[in-house]
Length: 143
Image 1 (cartoon, one colour):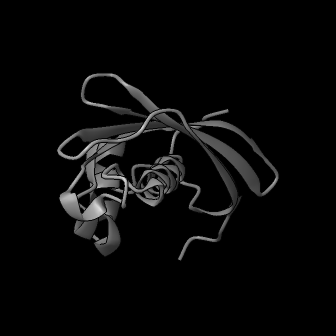
Image 2 (image 1 turned 45 degrees about the vertical axis):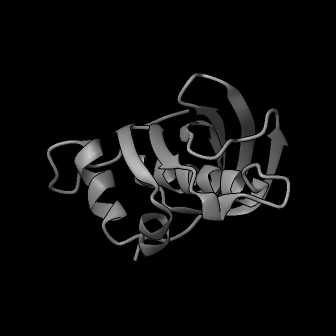
């Protein structure tokens, strides 16, 4: 269930999302970037740094989760319905590797009352499926 966000004076949803991203210091610090955005669908990317590796030499799962949660937030913004996650689950499919580029694409699946569900697929630059994230959100009033 996707309905377009108002552009709030921006030329496109992608311009709106890039503007919102300019205030997201956490995502910027992690190197998360906006790849594309339209109403109800957002794709973001992040390069895996050596500092993100765990003791096994693979990407710490928390970074995959953080990327998924970030995409969730921007999917909600793209629809004009800022939300916070109230519950989320992640299924790890394959390990992320040092030096890889993660690409995460999210889509809102449904919205009911003040709740929504967003699914995020995370792959690496070669199309290796790394994780699926499902976030259950609660819409919050706009500031």
